[in-house]
Image (cartoon, rainbow, N blue to C red; front, side, top):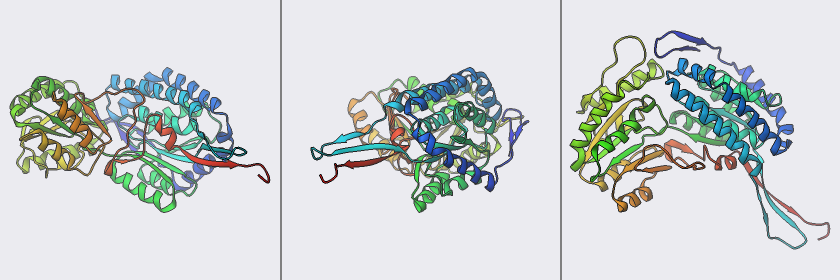
Length: 447
């Protein structure tokens, strides 16, 4: 695999793809290590995570620089991702020993228990858009509950992913955390490996769908957080400049390459003109703030979606053209007169686009936002309490945000719907996903 710096096009790494024998050996080592690691006291597993978190914190500058060179992520954002990853490792180190079962009320001479046990070997396949923060959650939850792990970071940031995992692995017994370099073929082999008991994947819906089928065929557990086509609804009665600021943040932060980026904007017609004008102003400001897309392949996807929208009748108010010179840069782009049939409304673009559709009222916005094959998240900007209540009850997504495109209390966890995946991919509930509940009934002889 050749990885190029998306700012300059220069080669930053060339990494060999693990072959079938290497994948099989990694799974075998993880399986061999499982018995001892699963019997290691939870407090000792937690201490290993605490120690690893300290090393990751010390290496924040190194990891951020690797991330910047491989994905183009702004250095401050990259460092923020590392800091978030450290916090996540600490969170699971604290939660792991507290993860518990329950007692049941059976006969007075019997003991009845429900106990969570580790599932076995977990294949963890992580993305490039926030490689440390996302991997920290899946690796931390899997390890602290007693699973062993084979980890494949994204092929778009192999050095970042490997270095992060190495910092954790050095605190663990041999075989507990194996690391593989590779592309989708390696992930495919791991998902199909008979000794892999759970596959945790964050990435595209197409890949997630294939993983779900493979796991279903052999009875393995799948935890999937996949693509999203997140809607933003802008209700009447708002300050249009404030609403535009929220829309721009959701659409343009990290060049639109966030799992819960704003992908579709529905604005009620009474505020549409003022909102759209303010959004154009925001896009011009954001033009000086964003970095490149991850690579030329993603640049092609974004421009193809813009071209399709224009051919189908959309208007480009700002942006909409590739940036001259080197690098995978694409400017913040605002499209109006969008329709649900356009690719920018049908598919996840994952780029700095703000496609706007004007609708007659809030009810129409809600109905059209729900008419989608994905189900990751949505945002509603409204001063109307009744509209807010109706929105969170009605929107068929895992996360609904009212009057803020980002944010949320610690410990929150949601299940994506439909093409966006299945299972809890973060939060305390991820500990439940990484374990299987066993019921024990214990009676005295002859009782």
